[in-house]
Image (cartoon, rainbow over all chains, first blue to last red):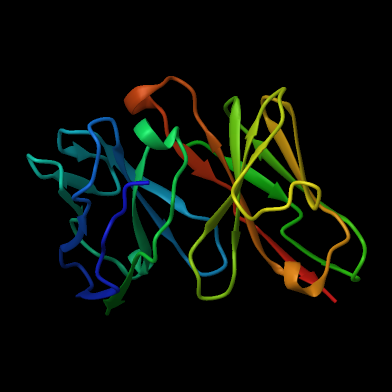
Length: 111
Length: 118
Protein backbone atom coordinates (compact mmCIF):
# COMPACT_ATOMS: atom_id res chain seq x y z
CA UNK A 1 0.00 0.00 0.00
CA UNK A 2 1.22 3.48 -0.81
CA UNK A 3 2.15 5.31 2.39
CA UNK A 4 1.72 8.85 3.57
CA UNK A 5 3.91 10.93 5.85
CA UNK A 6 2.46 13.60 8.13
CA UNK A 7 3.92 15.68 10.95
CA UNK A 8 3.10 14.21 14.35
CA UNK A 9 1.58 17.42 15.62
CA UNK A 10 0.79 21.00 14.71
CA UNK A 11 -0.55 23.98 16.58
CA UNK A 12 -2.69 26.87 15.50
CA UNK A 13 -4.52 29.81 16.94
CA UNK A 14 -8.25 30.19 16.69
CA UNK A 15 -9.53 31.97 13.57
CA UNK A 16 -6.20 31.59 11.78
CA UNK A 17 -5.71 29.41 8.70
CA UNK A 18 -4.11 26.01 9.14
CA UNK A 19 -2.14 24.16 6.49
CA UNK A 20 -1.72 20.46 7.20
CA UNK A 21 0.88 18.85 4.93
CA UNK A 22 1.01 15.28 3.68
CA UNK A 23 3.69 13.58 1.60
CA UNK A 24 2.83 10.60 -0.56
CA UNK A 25 5.74 10.15 -2.92
CA UNK A 26 4.77 6.60 -3.92
CA UNK A 27 1.21 7.46 -4.91
CA UNK A 28 -0.08 5.63 -7.96
CA UNK A 29 -2.00 7.23 -10.76
CA UNK A 30 -5.31 5.80 -9.54
CA UNK A 31 -4.94 6.56 -5.82
CA UNK A 32 -7.27 9.14 -4.37
CA UNK A 33 -6.11 11.38 -1.53
CA UNK A 34 -8.53 11.26 1.40
CA UNK A 35 -8.56 13.33 4.56
CA UNK A 36 -10.40 12.33 7.69
CA UNK A 37 -10.30 13.69 11.20
CA UNK A 38 -11.03 12.01 14.50
CA UNK A 39 -11.99 13.33 17.88
CA UNK A 40 -11.33 11.23 21.00
CA UNK A 41 -13.71 8.29 21.37
CA UNK A 42 -15.42 9.03 18.06
CA UNK A 43 -15.29 7.52 14.62
CA UNK A 44 -13.34 9.34 11.91
CA UNK A 45 -15.18 12.15 10.15
CA UNK A 46 -14.84 12.59 6.40
CA UNK A 47 -13.25 15.92 5.50
CA UNK A 48 -12.40 15.93 1.82
CA UNK A 49 -10.88 13.88 -0.97
CA UNK A 50 -9.49 14.44 -4.44
CA UNK A 51 -7.52 12.94 -7.29
CA UNK A 52 -5.65 15.59 -9.23
CA UNK A 53 -7.41 18.93 -9.04
CA UNK A 54 -7.70 21.09 -5.97
CA UNK A 55 -10.98 20.59 -4.13
CA UNK A 56 -13.08 22.82 -1.94
CA UNK A 57 -16.01 22.06 0.33
CA UNK A 58 -17.64 23.71 3.29
CA UNK A 59 -15.17 22.16 5.72
CA UNK A 60 -11.82 22.63 4.02
CA UNK A 61 -9.78 22.90 0.86
CA UNK A 62 -7.42 20.31 -0.54
CA UNK A 63 -4.44 21.51 -2.52
CA UNK A 64 -2.74 18.76 -4.53
CA UNK A 65 0.75 19.23 -5.93
CA UNK A 66 1.11 18.98 -9.67
CA UNK A 67 3.17 15.79 -9.39
CA UNK A 68 0.68 14.47 -6.79
CA UNK A 69 3.49 13.54 -4.44
CA UNK A 70 2.21 15.83 -1.75
CA UNK A 71 -0.97 17.57 -0.70
CA UNK A 72 -2.11 20.12 1.85
CA UNK A 73 -5.34 20.27 3.77
CA UNK A 74 -6.33 23.86 4.41
CA UNK A 75 -8.67 24.89 7.19
CA UNK A 76 -9.41 28.50 6.38
CA UNK A 77 -10.29 29.67 9.88
CA UNK A 78 -9.52 27.25 12.66
CA UNK A 79 -11.96 26.91 15.51
CA UNK A 80 -11.59 25.04 18.78
CA UNK A 81 -13.85 22.35 17.30
CA UNK A 82 -11.22 21.67 14.64
CA UNK A 83 -8.83 20.26 17.22
CA UNK A 84 -8.50 16.60 16.26
CA UNK A 85 -6.23 14.00 14.73
CA UNK A 86 -6.11 14.51 10.97
CA UNK A 87 -5.41 11.54 8.74
CA UNK A 88 -4.18 11.76 5.16
CA UNK A 89 -4.87 8.45 3.42
CA UNK A 90 -4.46 7.09 -0.07
CA UNK A 91 -7.43 5.01 -1.14
CA UNK A 92 -9.13 3.52 -4.13
CA UNK A 93 -7.00 2.55 -7.04
CA UNK A 94 -4.48 -0.10 -6.07
CA UNK A 95 -5.92 -0.52 -2.57
CA UNK A 96 -9.34 -1.52 -3.92
CA UNK A 97 -11.07 1.02 -1.75
CA UNK A 98 -9.39 0.04 1.51
CA UNK A 99 -8.15 2.89 3.66
CA UNK A 100 -4.95 2.35 5.63
CA UNK A 101 -4.66 4.76 8.53
CA UNK A 102 -1.27 6.09 9.62
CA UNK A 103 -0.62 7.97 12.84
CA UNK A 104 -1.98 11.26 11.55
CA UNK A 105 -1.34 14.80 12.74
CA UNK A 106 -2.60 15.95 16.11
CA UNK A 107 -3.89 19.48 15.62
CA UNK A 108 -4.08 21.69 18.68
CA UNK A 109 -6.03 24.94 18.39
CA UNK A 110 -5.33 27.65 20.93
CA UNK A 111 -8.03 30.16 21.88
CA UNK B 1 -22.46 13.82 4.51
CA UNK B 2 -23.87 10.32 4.67
CA UNK B 3 -24.74 8.84 8.08
CA UNK B 4 -23.54 5.57 9.51
CA UNK B 5 -24.75 4.31 12.86
CA UNK B 6 -23.45 1.64 15.21
CA UNK B 7 -25.17 -0.22 17.99
CA UNK B 8 -24.43 -0.54 20.79
CA UNK B 9 -22.19 2.44 21.51
CA UNK B 10 -20.60 0.61 24.38
CA UNK B 11 -20.83 -2.88 25.81
CA UNK B 12 -19.37 -4.69 28.78
CA UNK B 13 -19.35 -8.46 28.75
CA UNK B 14 -17.86 -11.37 30.62
CA UNK B 15 -14.94 -13.32 29.25
CA UNK B 16 -16.09 -16.22 27.09
CA UNK B 17 -19.32 -14.64 25.89
CA UNK B 18 -20.09 -13.38 22.40
CA UNK B 19 -20.94 -9.83 21.45
CA UNK B 20 -22.65 -8.59 18.31
CA UNK B 21 -22.11 -5.10 16.94
CA UNK B 22 -24.36 -3.66 14.24
CA UNK B 23 -23.36 -1.15 11.59
CA UNK B 24 -26.03 0.56 9.51
CA UNK B 25 -25.87 3.02 6.64
CA UNK B 26 -28.90 5.19 7.30
CA UNK B 27 -29.35 7.18 4.11
CA UNK B 28 -27.51 5.25 1.45
CA UNK B 29 -26.93 1.71 0.33
CA UNK B 30 -23.52 0.22 0.86
CA UNK B 31 -22.42 -2.90 -0.95
CA UNK B 32 -19.14 -2.69 0.92
CA UNK B 33 -18.53 -1.99 4.58
CA UNK B 34 -15.32 -2.15 6.55
CA UNK B 35 -14.55 -3.03 10.16
CA UNK B 36 -11.70 -1.43 12.07
CA UNK B 37 -10.31 -1.78 15.55
CA UNK B 38 -8.53 0.93 17.51
CA UNK B 39 -6.57 0.43 20.71
CA UNK B 40 -5.84 3.37 23.04
CA UNK B 41 -3.44 5.94 21.60
CA UNK B 42 -3.13 3.98 18.37
CA UNK B 43 -4.46 4.46 14.89
CA UNK B 44 -7.28 2.51 13.29
CA UNK B 45 -6.44 -0.95 12.04
CA UNK B 46 -8.53 -2.51 9.28
CA UNK B 47 -9.87 -5.90 10.31
CA UNK B 48 -12.01 -6.95 7.39
CA UNK B 49 -13.96 -5.94 4.33
CA UNK B 50 -17.62 -6.87 4.36
CA UNK B 51 -19.37 -7.38 1.03
CA UNK B 52 -23.13 -7.66 0.78
CA UNK B 53 -24.18 -11.18 -0.11
CA UNK B 54 -20.73 -12.71 0.03
CA UNK B 55 -18.07 -13.73 2.50
CA UNK B 56 -16.00 -11.12 4.24
CA UNK B 57 -12.34 -10.66 3.43
CA UNK B 58 -10.11 -10.57 6.49
CA UNK B 59 -6.80 -8.78 6.87
CA UNK B 60 -3.73 -10.79 7.72
CA UNK B 61 -3.64 -11.80 11.35
CA UNK B 62 -7.37 -11.37 11.98
CA UNK B 63 -9.09 -14.61 12.95
CA UNK B 64 -12.19 -15.07 10.82
CA UNK B 65 -13.68 -17.63 13.21
CA UNK B 66 -13.36 -15.24 16.10
CA UNK B 67 -14.66 -12.14 14.36
CA UNK B 68 -17.73 -13.22 12.42
CA UNK B 69 -19.02 -10.76 9.86
CA UNK B 70 -22.42 -10.87 8.20
CA UNK B 71 -23.47 -8.35 5.55
CA UNK B 72 -27.01 -9.49 4.96
CA UNK B 73 -28.42 -6.35 3.37
CA UNK B 74 -27.27 -3.20 1.61
CA UNK B 75 -27.61 -1.20 4.81
CA UNK B 76 -26.53 -3.58 7.56
CA UNK B 77 -23.32 -5.36 8.50
CA UNK B 78 -22.73 -7.10 11.81
CA UNK B 79 -19.54 -8.03 13.61
CA UNK B 80 -19.74 -10.75 16.23
CA UNK B 81 -16.83 -11.16 18.59
CA UNK B 82 -17.04 -14.79 19.66
CA UNK B 83 -15.70 -16.08 22.96
CA UNK B 84 -14.47 -12.64 23.86
CA UNK B 85 -11.42 -12.24 26.07
CA UNK B 86 -9.98 -9.18 27.82
CA UNK B 87 -7.47 -8.65 25.00
CA UNK B 88 -10.42 -8.11 22.64
CA UNK B 89 -11.35 -5.00 24.58
CA UNK B 90 -11.06 -2.19 22.08
CA UNK B 91 -12.89 0.48 20.10
CA UNK B 92 -14.57 -1.10 17.08
CA UNK B 93 -15.46 1.19 14.19
CA UNK B 94 -17.25 0.42 10.96
CA UNK B 95 -17.38 2.35 7.73
CA UNK B 96 -19.63 2.16 4.71
CA UNK B 97 -18.57 2.97 1.19
CA UNK B 98 -20.84 4.92 -1.09
CA UNK B 99 -21.39 3.67 -4.60
CA UNK B 100 -20.78 5.52 -7.82
CA UNK B 101 -17.16 4.81 -8.44
CA UNK B 102 -14.33 7.23 -9.00
CA UNK B 103 -14.48 10.60 -7.31
CA UNK B 104 -18.03 9.93 -6.15
CA UNK B 105 -16.96 7.07 -3.96
CA UNK B 106 -15.92 7.60 -0.37
CA UNK B 107 -16.28 6.04 3.04
CA UNK B 108 -18.27 7.28 5.98
CA UNK B 109 -17.58 6.04 9.46
CA UNK B 110 -19.80 5.06 12.33
CA UNK B 111 -19.37 6.54 15.81
CA UNK B 112 -17.69 3.40 17.14
CA UNK B 113 -18.46 0.76 19.75
CA UNK B 114 -16.45 0.55 22.94
CA UNK B 115 -16.08 -3.11 24.01
CA UNK B 116 -14.85 -4.00 27.47
CA UNK B 117 -14.38 -7.67 28.28
CA UNK B 118 -14.06 -8.47 31.96
